[in-house]
Image (cartoon, rainbow, N blue to C red; front, side, top):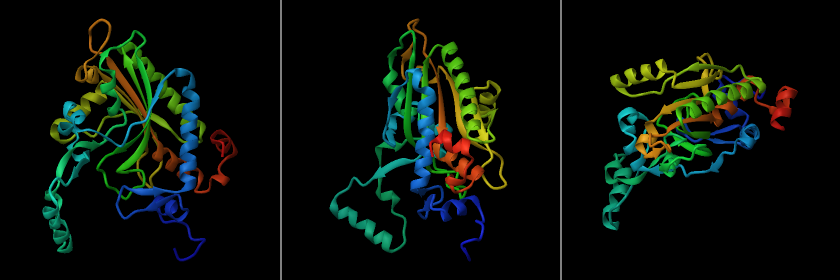
Length: 304
């Protein structure tokens, strides 16, 4: 910037100039400043508040999951472009000298690594499904999580992150139980975001399936209305951004992980996730970079 009073040239620049995010030299990754984290924590607390009486079991999982989970779910058939496999060196000290030599010469060194048993978690709900294996009680299961997610989507847009956090809920039960629950949360999510002064609307959506077959899968998903998103205008001159999603998986995870109803049928599942960083960025975009100047009703609701 040429002067302290000059306006930021983009949303990303504004977030950086106000110390809300911290560049780290890689697209789709950045540090978070204290004010950014405060707003995120306060929004997450609002989700706690509106879901307090639901009886959800709270879990936190690490940013990595077993590679066997994505293999069981055929994740690489649908989303190979998003995967973050964790690799490491399995050789001896003598072989490790190749790293220094190649790096000094500016040469690739990835072929010296091998895959480990873990991958970066690509979906906030994935870690919990193996814990449901077995017969589901009549009331089903309800879990909430606060998880890190990785997707290989480098982008200059601040809302398109490679690593981000999601406040997730997962419901397991009969089709009627999980669809009713998903639809209830869709209205809850809209009401919550609109109460914070965000111009939030819902719409039918689909996942970013890979390749030609993926286009057919995405069309089918949208036609069956299995996925809804809540959209908010965020990025400069771009279409609205999805800040939370609400998904009905039918019996996909029930069949994959042997999660069964008392009747013996595979259980149905649904999940919803609030993209916490995206929501925080939407608040800064909508109300300005200084929370002290946000509308009083918004500040009160967030406890700022």
